[in-house]
Length: 259
Figure 1 (tube, helix red, strand yellow):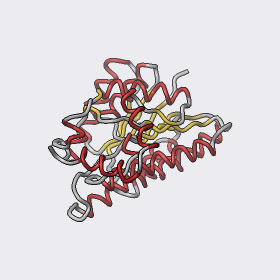
Figure 2 (cartoon, helix red, strand yellow):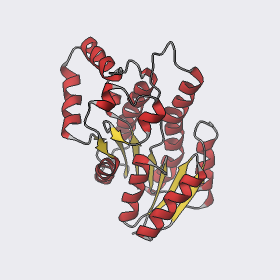
Figure 3 (cartoon, rainbow, N blue to C red):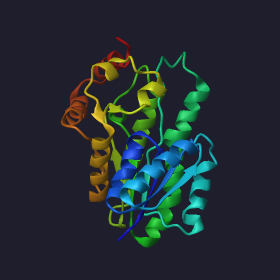
Figure 4 (cartoon, one colour):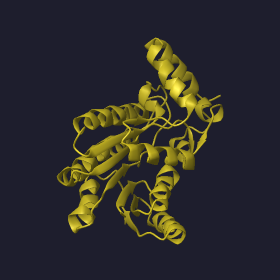
């Protein structure tokens, strides 16, 4: 049966590829992002290839009122959202003492507060229907402290912990929550964060967004709690759990620094 997925940050990168995964499986899609032109281009591509209905909502999630506006424009207006994908997010590189506070507060608003707000809103009708799936895009950064990207790493740690916690609360309700934790991925993320010259982005294996999205989609449909694409990323996360925390922090600093 055809269902509907709402994807934040759905015009580019992993969000766009996730939208294509839903469409390829016959589901309608609602895309949200800041830039209307990019949204319309993404919608046209998906509709043309997959023949599903794609709606667009141009909103900036740095505005704290936007999650309610998104809900009102969908569920509140009679459109049932069966899958919620909290994908929108951005990072910022640099030492905390020097980075821009306003941008960091915007990051917390997008990466953390909007995820909580949207999940709270869309969860209620899912629970009433006893059906629904939520995918929160976290990161392998969720597992590490992140010198030179301290706020970004912290926001993703929140997303992972939040997703695991409510996923357990929702067990046996018919609603599942999945945290997708990709490593470095070929998107415009690093350019926007100002981290293109970090060792993480110049010396690491970089995944393609399509494969990450496919992995995340399948994990979400299985109701998997935490999804880490790539064997290297899985091993990295396991190594973090047994290494001394101080060593992990020093190593993370090295890979976040420029060459």
